[in-house]
Image (cartoon, rainbow, N blue to C red):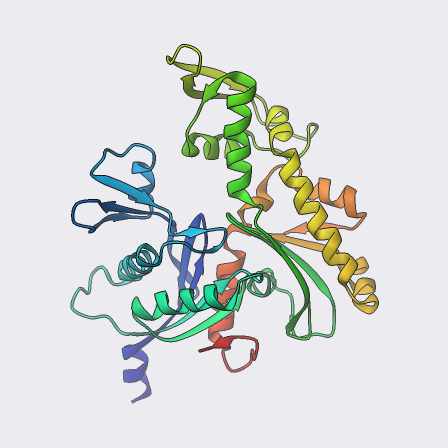
Length: 342
């Protein structure tokens, strides 16, 4: 009988990110798509979700619009978010059109989220087919995903640099002791690069191109080991209006994102200031753990280490650490009292 109910109810963990949404089912990443939806303006129908919608972004005509339903880690467009979650969940059951089981979901949320924003995430999940919805703070999910025993009386500092928010939290005894959440993260780095290209090179580039530059030659310091080769960037010349190409080096990008990284460093220092002294002693030993896509910026760990004088460790798969942690929490729902139930 239990197996029948197991078949009728399925567990999924969702890392609902500003830039990417990852769904984990049975310990496997089954969906990893950009958080973006393409909608037909005339009918309001969803045309594409995820990677296909991403390819349309910045290239649409007047009948199609692309929407990123999440901004700064929270839902900005409720309907689009609901459609996106529903379509991504449907990707799990692409072969079984006739059957959608009841879903038990764990969804990750930023630690600085307000109760209203929390409600929006929960409602979207319920409308998309979630029968039981649990919410989990991202730094906590990242800590579990990294492999830290969060229930120990040992302090750990987690910095999760996502697309929209950077969540910094000191975790001990299965709870967040003090946290700091700022809306400076990967998206901010991308817009810094767009701004830099316009100011420095008189060249207009799109969001997708800036994102590509960040991945190919993004760096947090002007001098790093194993520097990447210069990258050719294509865009529109602001003076002539003609498309052109410019070679960009990693040190230029390091200058472009410098201010945003300084804000993240400040936020880490503020979190350390609020930490109780016993936990500060633990953090001196354990150091700082980085997770999230933003932590993959070359040299960022070294730069934060120089600023805080603490050892800095990057999660082995930083992009998926939060989703993996949510998957583990889902398996041990009764063990973790910090899962927020509706």
